[in-house]
Amino acid sequence: MGAEESRHDLWTKRINTWIGILGGSVAVVVGAYNFLPRAPGEIAAVVREQGGAPVPHAHVELLTSQNVLLGASETDRSGRYAKKGLEPGSYILKVSRTAFEPQVTTVSVASKKTTDLELVLRSRSRNQASTSPQAVRPSLTQGDPIRSALEETGASFIKSLAGKAQ
Image 1 (cartoon, helix red, strand yellow):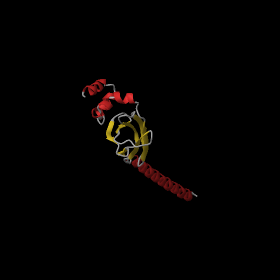
Image 2: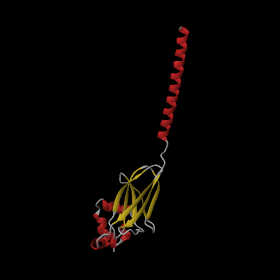
Image 3: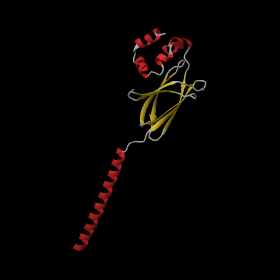
Image 4: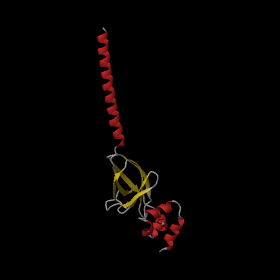
């Protein structure tokens, strides 16, 4: 019987060895997968006014969730905006256009996916549109992400300079 027990012990050791090898292999594969770069995603947005018509040439700013500007652009003639090659995560999208109230939205981008958005801009009242610095002279603030960021943080001297530069 002693020989039978040693064969049994030998098989148990072999099985345990193979389980250890397979378990280690799975751990290596899973660990390597975590270090692979995640595939980028993208944002595809359409900017419309309340009536449904597209808003061409709307100013669009893309920021990280920590409010760091990644880029600024304009919508095309059909009111479309697209940004490819974005790391998965949360982003802030700011859209503005003269005669419309600006809109800010948070966007979640997933790996290998396109996040589709439809943003609707509300018209400003005539009093607001005529007194805003962008309505007075749009080229001073629209399209300049540094100036718009300063204005948002309360740098009112820029707004007063924009009014004096006429």
